[in-house]
Length: 208
Image (cartoon, rainbow, N blue to C red; front, top):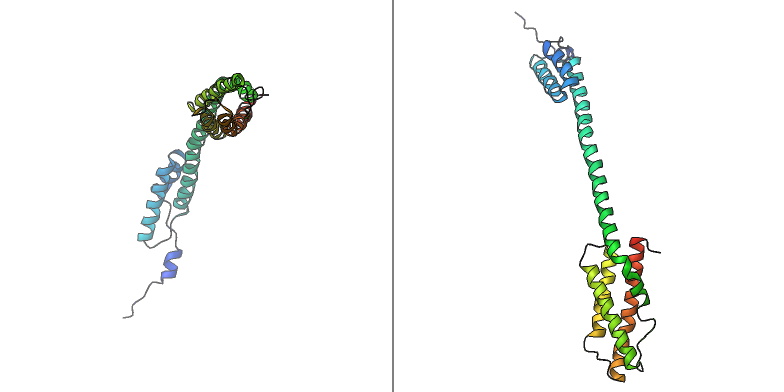
């Protein structure tokens, strides 16, 4: 008695008939997309166990379910990202405006610092005292800048102003030509850094 062997290639080309599970998967793919994916996968697995190819409806349910799931995720994520970015920009702009309201009034003092009383080795005591007072005022401006949130360029400029102005103030009594000559070396750098801070504030705040 001969034994008839089934041809595997013929078996896999057969398609399973549509079942209630396939129809449910299609419906769910439109209504609850992830469920449609799951049911479509279950239907395909059952068809494989029966030795037949998956029904077209189960494959379609998986494809549609995947597409609608992706669209649903995008519909949730994109607005969150967009509105989050807009809110962040609004906060940043408000912070910038508040910072500029505090910083812009100091631009004039930074710009005129050292213009009327430049320090040299022959600066008269009264002028030296005036320059010292201006330097203290500029140092206070630098401290104000560094005490609040600010843009990096402004922070770097303020650090330079604070450093050079302290060099002028620390240990320089402006009592004699030697001390004035030493102070003049730091004074030039202090004035230059103050101009740099003024330019940084103008660029950040749009001060004309």
